[in-house]
Length: 409
Figure 1 (cartoon, one colour):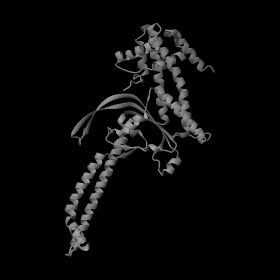
Figure 2: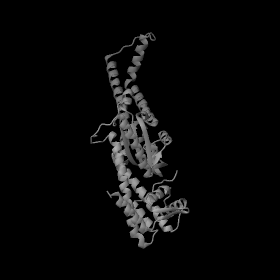
Figure 3: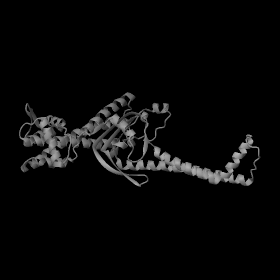
Figure 4: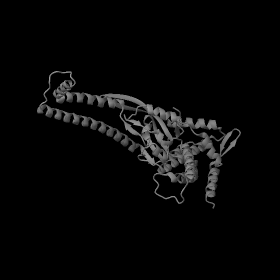
């Protein structure tokens, strides 16, 4: 499994961690630097949030406002394209990784940890993209054979999963003679989940339907076959023998006549009623088992769902903002502590080793993104032999000037 880019510490904790690299007398100034830097990043991400909201509004299934000017289909399509690109950029900034199509195909062939078999109608989608962050290996003990046997398994778990799905238009559903359930044709839905096993990604699709697993069908069929045979023998045995004899007489396979008394007819009627009630009981068992599976699915999703549609923007923008701040603050503090030029590779290795040795955390630090932000804000200078940090006092002045420029008009 590849290393995660995600830094699993809060921004305030990262600032405290970076303080340990600097002299005590510089801690207060470093806090002010980090606060100024975070404020500027927050202002920039607010603009990106507004862009996401504006481009998502024309096809937001939960919108409670009206569009001032009706948009043409071409305008809506342009909004969808701009939104998809901006949404992808935010997820990348938040250090989410895209789940490949091959991963999704592999998921469909794996057995669910929740013992629920799902079917997904992929033809309903115009576009499907899954993103994940925080992949880890977990151990779980499952009970099999009706709780008599325990089975230890290891599986891949995703701490966060973002889902982007765009449905086909209404013309497709009319042509396919399908009724959309729980979604609008042509709409785009976005969802955010937590703690999702890789083998259960299929349960996140909005149109997934519960189906019986082969083992469940075998159990129900065997029960019905045995029970039905018992009913036929005990309740309808005599009547069936008489019916077979009567049929043989009518077909000329039997020469002796068969007498069918009123008592035989009553017994036959009662037997058929019992057999009918047994069939209904087995059918009810099947329906109840399916309802049980659907409840297991809905209960599971209830506790894993974090946010939906436009609400996801705020969560992801905040996450992207945090990651940008953490990366830049860490890189700056290491350059400040080095006191001499550092190459990107030297800096990257030093930061990753620091996390591993001091905090038992292995990650793939985004050194290129961190240095790009510091260069953009002119907080580092690049020479032939590497990068040098602007002294803390001058860095704060630089950030003060940048902040003032945001509001100069």
